[in-house]
Image 1 (cartoon, rainbow, N blue to C red):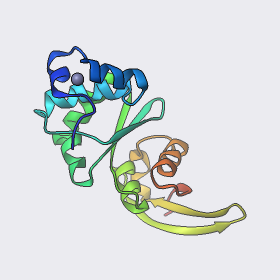
Image 2 (image 1 turned 120 degrees about the vertical axis):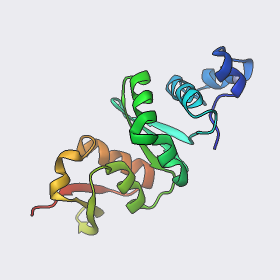
Image 3 (image 1 turned 90 degrees about the vertical axis):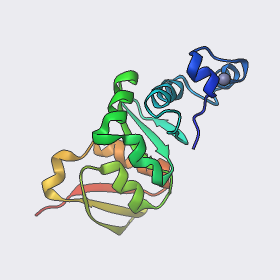
Length: 164
Ligand SMILES: [Zn+2]
C-alpha cells in the first residue's frame, strides 16, 4: 500500500516535477496530498491508502481491508490527526465492494443488526438496520452515508434504526 506522492516530496515538503504534474492533472488532489503528509509523518511511511472520496464535510479514505485498523490508529489517533489537518470528518473503509463490509466500516461505531433486500417500484434496494441503542453513534447524515455506500458498492440503500 503506497501513498500517491513520492517519499522525496513527503520528506522535503516540496513537490518534484512528477508529483507536481500529478497534482496539476488532477490524478492526485490537494486533499490527498495533505492526507499523505499526515500518514507519512505518523506512519513512518508504512501506511498508505488507495483513494479518497470527498463528500464535502466528510472524507472517505479507502484502503486495503487489512489496513483499515492501521489507518485509524490506536484509539483513532491517526484519523483524528488527519481530520484536524484537513478540517473535515474522516471515515476509513476497506476497499472491498461487498455491501456488508462497506456498511460495517462506514457506520462504525454504530453496529448493524441486519441487512435485507427490499423490492420497490424503483427497483431493489437494501435496508441496512442499525441497532437501536447505537442510533446516536451513527457517524453522519443518513443521506450522505447512503450516497457513499452507493459510490463504493453501486447498491441503493436505506439506513434505518431498529424500532425496538
Ligand atoms: Zn515527488
